[in-house]
Length: 230
Ligand code: 5RP
Image (cartoon, rainbow, N blue to C red; front, top):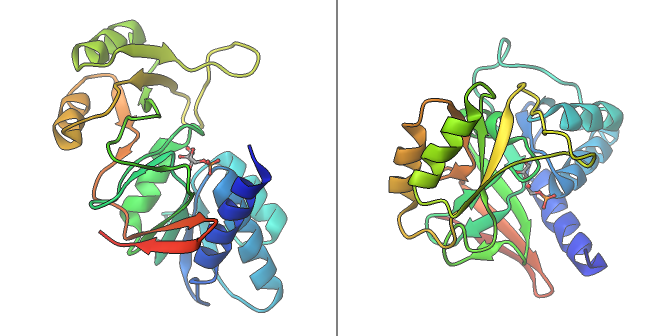
């Protein structure tokens, strides 16, 4: 990854973190871009910001604790004021997203859905004309019968369905104890229809298409930060 890309991720992340105000319940995304946002919130806490966070993964929970962000949960707060997270692809217009290459899509979607405002932070490599252009759709499935679930995903048009593995080649296990199948579709013409088909498969817990959920997307490039709204 080029260092320019890291600078852009960090720029978008810090700008989003600076939208957070004292008293807010904040959804803390997962991934390299979200990590910059967590670090910036940590800095702001040392300057007097008072917030509580709900992390979208065990990894983000660890990073938030290290940054000094007090954590809470849905037992205490059903609604979040804001959630800030990265994405793997962003489609301009409706701001449809693919998320989950970091493996946290289920908790990320629960947190995004509970947030009054869902802010997405990306560098210039993430915008696409059609979802699926570059990234596979990660689908979280229960491990029981995953081979059947994979066949059903192929029947929805996936050209490739690959069980995700970790660095050691073992099957990846999500924070929720599930598997992830990375499904390559290529450019998707009708994401809503595909989402309906995937949602109807028994064994699918959740898929990584976030449709009509983002309130705004901050895209950082060489030219500065563009703010997209649906
Ligand atoms: C994790 C995600 C991440 O937000 C997504 O993969 C983007 O990650 P990064 O900021 O590292 O490019 O959805 O499940």
